[in-house]
Image 1 (cartoon, helix red, strand yellow):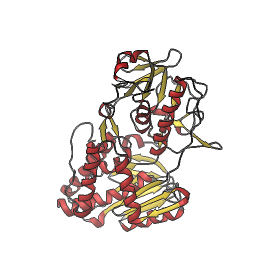
Image 2 (tube, one colour):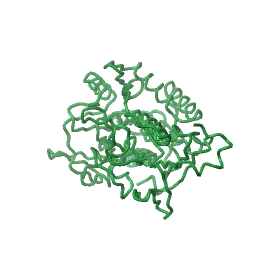
Image 3 (tube, one colour):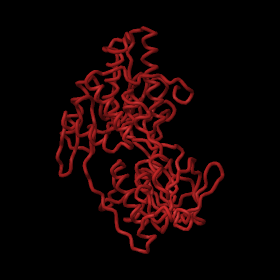
Image 4 (cartoon, rainbow, N blue to C red):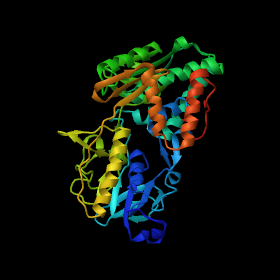
Length: 428
């Protein structure tokens, strides 16, 4: 059933679906319910949707923050049955079907969707949450960009000959992409901005506990990523377990210590700290909540979970990875199942369609694993990566701006958005 303009005054009589979170999963749920026979409220502490796969480019001054963010209200401006509530969820009372916000207000629901995503996981490493720089939100990206640019500026002023080291922790896609882009940022700053720095004394070190990069990819893709990073100047070190981070150094379990100007944390995420308080749910891996095949919480009829917040079953006790495609597909499926319940129909199980995974390593270099084990790398993989990310960006203006920026950077490496926005929130 599609909601017509004539039925708008009767929206209050429709089942109320509350979606907590405006990321990939939450937006996918709301899109699936837009102009249907339900009313929808999206709650998020930010009034914009963030395209997280490109945050590392904001952090390394390749894109502006506005290029990867889009107002949630604008996304659903056409949908008469979707409204947005700017606020922070404090807790959920499942016995009364009520969501409590930090400002004291309450929102009733008939169906609740948990799409809260995840936050950086520091795994109890002393000093990590205080001194390492995570990269999971737009605020993280802005703060990291300011930190990196400030370090380069201050190093030139000091004019000393001591090494300048940046350490990236985590050999997954975020760590690989960030370390590759960081070396490009340093090269551009020296070449185009006239920073008087000796490239020979600047180190970018990527460390990981695993024996190879990109462990979710085939071995040949991992080997290619390592070769490309090392050819760009990144030092790759495996089997490194971080035991402590302080203001100027990072410590490993073998007693080794690296003095560094900044530690970038890309070692993993946890969904637990992002979940609302008082949510009754069965805990799953990485703090995620366990859901049944139709994406409802176990032992619940009206609470659903999608995306990074959910331990979405894949097969034989294995759960889907915390990836954007999983978030989008689970969000769409959740919306369809809610409509089935509202219409008195039985639900169907979620089936994830694996369309492959990608990671860029730098200019003209990327790896992609397509379905059936096909691996594409190099320039072809990079072009595929560009096309896919442009396709999934929200808003024509954002797509156009990112395309122009990428094209310009490819041919000329312009000055770009290397701006230090020196405010209290973004500069340590």
